[in-house]
Image 1 (tube, rainbow, N blue to C red):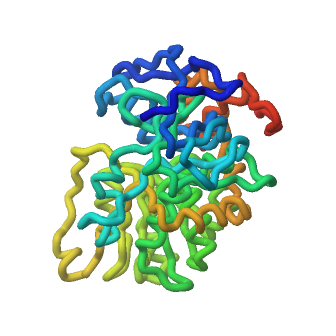
Image 2: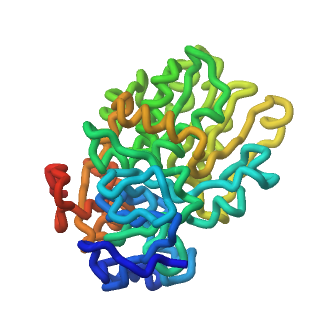
Image 3: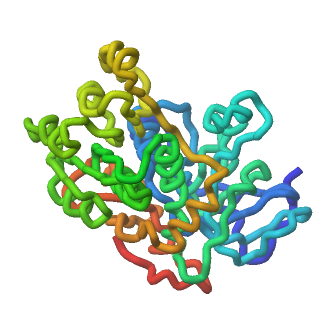
Length: 375
């Protein structure tokens, strides 16, 4: 049952950016979601643009209609009649995937493979798909364990960054690393820079590579002690020199590339690890010498999505600004320019890192002064 009464101040309709097919995003006027007795209604303030959004929009990997956007933070405007522990006016970051904690996958800690986890728990309408590219979202009861309150000193923008930071911290925790190990992070976009910072905080030595020189400058400020251009023909030799001829303890691949995946196996030491992160488009094939896996005991591992169990740790890292996500955001667009935001994020270039949709540029939330930053 959805609540039939709507509190004063909540409109009947809202603007939403609706996916109607490949490269077809339309600004539409839709009903504001109605919530059930154990759900929340949140007015969206900021939503980050994720590479998975780009993949879905550009390649049409899911059926329309959908309202994407899952890196979401906003303000609670309605609390379900039976729900306790939340208040109207609280600023919150949302977590759109929550596992059941009971199935075979969950018992093995493989939360991202849980059938319940794959059913998005935050929606603005249609098939649940995050909904952050709409003015209001309904937070279903299954997603409530992932709702995090944003401290007064922090912004909605910082809250929206919890989700991508969570995915990176989850991957870092999958790596078997010791203090002083040497790890190469390939790609220094926003995700790569998060890896660089979190690894540096873990007291490992970080090397970084990217094709864009200004990103290497950023990498140093985030904790990398060595940086190289990704197309350096002597890169393999320089990695060996950096690791005293041993090979890297781990290589993290944040930019999809079959060629680099093959090369990375050669960059790690015996019993080293290659972490594949962000390669979510199926069909990408890479040839690997199986003797490297068997005889050399090298591990090829992956990590996908987030982990609800580390959400509090992620919040502490972001809200304490040990990982200052504000410096990653280079472009902010209003809701009506979401298509432009996705285009901007899909084309890596100098000066472009994290792109977000900031609803407050066009429609400030009353009582919350976040300086309404322009893109």
